[in-house]
Length: 143
Image (cartoon, rainbow, N blue to C red; front, side, top):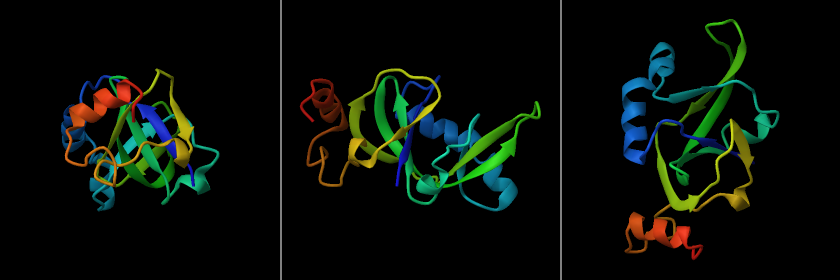
């Protein structure tokens, strides 16, 4: 199993991402009768078999990994200009993770399971603390 990590460009908060997805991300699912979210990217991952139905996409928002979405499948597609691309079909659930700073990068990258932040509430930083406290501790390198 392998995950993906992607910058969430143009989105400043997790709440903004959730609102954006609620407004616009159902276009694919509506056409196919599924409750899913889809993100289109230019390239199909070469490690597709290790991702589909097993991995998640981790979203970097304002320089911090804040959440993940389980990846159901990767679908070959063609964009409006006739170029090949990949639709990342994800479960609609956004799972909050222990905040972790992440330097900028372009496109998406693979993320090894051992390098992925833990889910909040899964025996991690949410043991009675706040997300803000967890973010500050992560920024200081303490979690």
